[in-house]
Amino acid sequence: MPAMNMIQALNSAMDTMMSRDPDVLVFGEDVGYFGGVFRATEGLQKKHGLTRCFDAPIAEGGIVATAIGMGAYGLRPVIEIQFADYIYPAYDQIVSEAARLRYRSAGDFTAPITLRTPYGGGIFGGQTHSQSPEALFTHVAGIKTVIPSNPYDAKGLLIAAIEDDDPVIMFEPKRLYNGPFDGWHENPVSPWARHPDSEVPDGHYVVPLGKAKVVREGADLTVLAWGTMVHVALAAAEHAQVDAEVIDLRTLVPVDIETIVASVNKTGRCVIVHEATRTSGFGAELSAMVQEECFYKLEAPIARVTGWDTPYPHAFEWEYFPGPKRVAEAMQRTMNGKG
Image 1 (cartoon, rainbow, N blue to C red):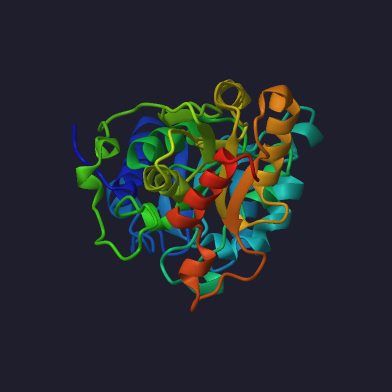
Image 2 (cartoon, one colour; image 1 turned 90 degrees about the vertical axis):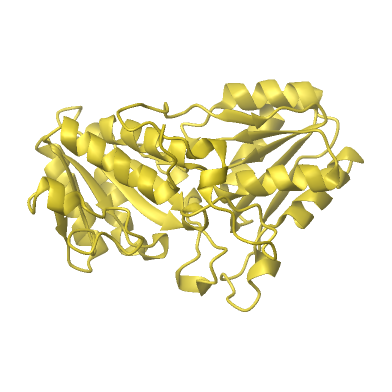
């Protein structure tokens, strides 16, 4: 089984689906001849032709609107928004059209579109290349929200998204494109080739949407994380010397509440970790769900470790980024019965 980084796994997913289904096509800014700013679509235009992998103008609203029309007429477009920070001009089309099309047409039309976009920090991208806007979409009925943490899941989740008959947004942690990152930024970069989740099958397989994965079993507390924060949580558990059970949600909507409840009922404690700003982040929704479902099993207040309620700072990247030290401190507070 070949070892792939996340970019190669995403490319393999699109190539696999374009080879299997002539209705699948790929477009976005610089995704054709250039192969995308991160090279996730490299070689697809050459292999599948100009009509199935092509460049779009710098007009995010137009890209999404075009994809919605294509989907309504039976195609399965996979579109790329170059950075999640630039998704906002397309927000009305995503929310008012793509997410509502099935409901508004009483099921006569659907929007089987997949929207890929790199998100998150850890690359010194500053306020315009580091945002984590996933909570803006988890709030909207009719959209599935997916965030992988490794190459194997990235390919399987993207294939599942493309095959889904409703709109799916995949936020791709760009800090993980070329290797896992545990938040210890002083350490040398580690490539995916040394990680077991870099073993990615060549052909078709699916990681089901709405199914979380327990990546580390433990008895002391439960950590809920996604994307880069999965690796940070694993490093924090080691740093804090806490027997933490770490859950990679993989899909935020629909969320795998059964796996979450089973774990928190077992451990009695919960720490939620995400890069996005704290106020109204998806961690708040998770905290409410855990409180509602596990109240009588909780031994300590639910803790959240997040980005701060500020624009993403360039100069203070690692003060903003929820690193393993900050997560470990939250784990220790939770073990002592404090939030």
